[in-house]
Length: 255
Image (cartoon, rainbow, N blue to C red; front, side, top):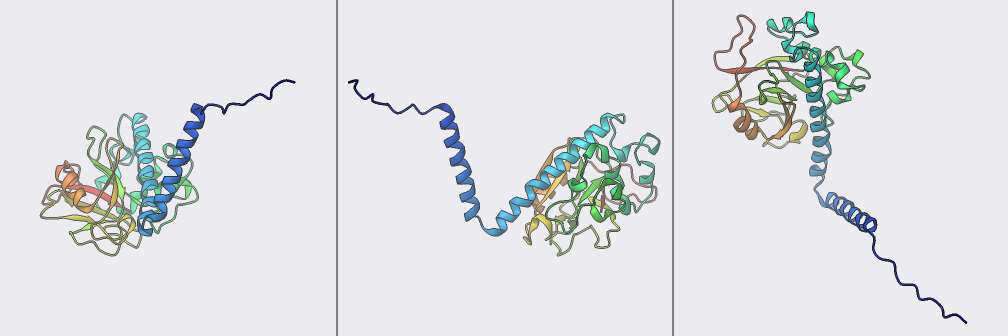
């Protein structure tokens, strides 16, 4: 009679090890989310998609610029597909949506990218329906350029004046009629801050996302926006005739 063979346990393979590590990482992530305060979970669940939205918008700007003489829509003439001529007039906040509608092909199939998950506004069903600011969460910096990587190209719409955040959406009016704003770069004398809406979640420190001329998206508090970005910003030079601010400022259209 043959002796019963003794089966040795098989060795722990590399695939087994990778699988185990992945399971542990996912488990720890879920566990950490479970113990995070509810407001912190909500903060993370909306801010990361918003950053991704802005990055996608930044990519659309660059693709559009590559096809239009290396200029963003606000710097390109209407004859070449842009809307520069309209911006020679003041009070163009109601046309903020135009800046994004011109890039609809580059933005993809869904206008959801134009609405932050933490905003009260809802995306339009299709880009053809984007004919007002109603379905837009992000402001447009209409002097930004890819030759100035740190210029302000876009960001959350809930910026407002002063250093005490308001309960509304700051420069972005409830009427959806938009706002054509000169934001002073003298951040100590004329401060700007995020309102209590969107990513601030009611915190007086404020929190928001911005998009820069190089296509990068950044997260910043109100203090960080003023000290790390606004004080180093290049003032706008292409102001409408008769509407040049008395202090160095940047021009921003709020939806």
